Image (cartoon, rainbow, N blue to C red; front, side, top):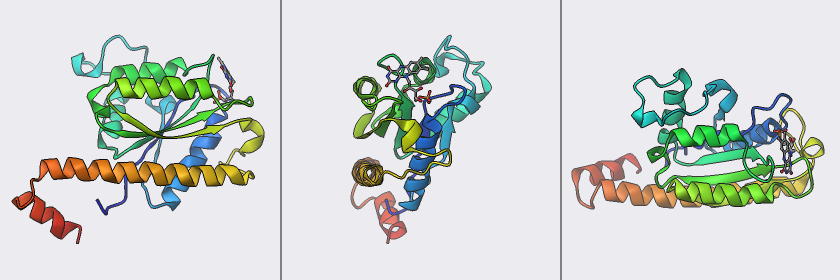
Length: 205
Ligand SMILES: Cc1cc2nc3c(=O)[nH]c(=O)nc-3n(C[C@H](O)[C@H](O)[C@H](O)COP(=O)(O)O)c2cc1C
């Protein structure tokens, strides 16, 4: 897989005045600098109502749901940037995740937890890891942001060098797993020597 990786950044906060968006902007920008396509997936824009039934059982999906599902399905990996609320994830994030399932199959996931306090959302990290394993996704990289109000500016910049370093390591790990898993999926889809495998080899030089 030599093409740019598609790694959208799912924003887990819709709170008025949300600070998580600062970290999401940072993540999206640094992923793009590393060569990925990393659009923000903002739950506020998808505007998903309370889940009454999963997407695959609905013939009347709410307007944003198909777009949300397609964005996850098409992604090579997903970065989730979420605040910790009451020791776990915001209801709006769980609600969105409950709509879909197969879209996450074997999807590498990077988890960035955000907190106004000093513990960086460590409980949330554990909860999200378990949730993504349940969805058969692979939580492979993690980073915690503490004291977000003073660590990140509105435009997604940080003055704290350790976050730059931590996120660079996060991206490296996520990209490694994403390419490794992508290669395994490609190999399975195109047995060695098949027309498809040869075409893919030509495509990738
Ligand atoms: C309902 C609610 C619950 C919260 N619970 C926690 C928590 O358990 N741990 C924590 O570190 N911060 C907690 N916070 C504070 C967040 O860390 C804070 O809102 C921070 O700015 C990141 O989230 P934001 O995107 O909502 O701004 C909570 C905030 C809200 C609104």
